[in-house]
Image 1 (cartoon, rainbow, N blue to C red):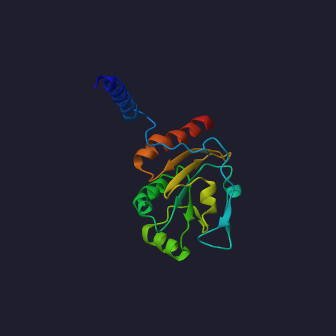
Image 2 (tube, helix red, strand yellow):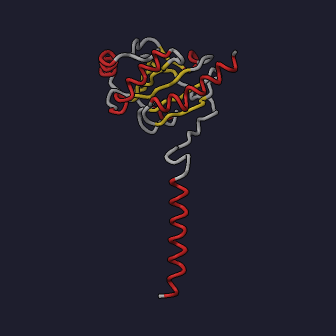
Image 3 (cartoon, rainbow, N blue to C red):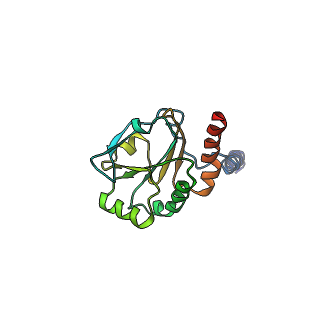
Length: 179
């Protein structure tokens, strides 16, 4: 029995140390995007409002924008929608929607019913563009600077806390730099 006491005690100590480290980790639950500080993936997709027009990263370049990946089938996207309307009202950064693997008629109906926070919505029927952006699940949002570099990724719902702690400071840095 004594020969097992030391290994069991060391194992228990290791478990306690790891548990404390995980509990106090500031990055707990964060999956870093490989896109941060890299050029935004290029795309050219049909517009939800007018399929004869395209939405592309080329036309978005030269200004800040927040790309929001969503779908009318997504329950969390519905919860997030009120916050997106607030972002639009703030006028601080344009919202660009990426409607992911959705039915166009349902997406248009959804926006008509809940309000349309987007400056423009690109339609990603096959999901290829979302894959290029490294999307795991909707909703996800990406803050892109005027040089076309991804500076922040929000996985999951964009909340007031994320807006205030993560996005606003990055936008305020740009205002300070241009002043």
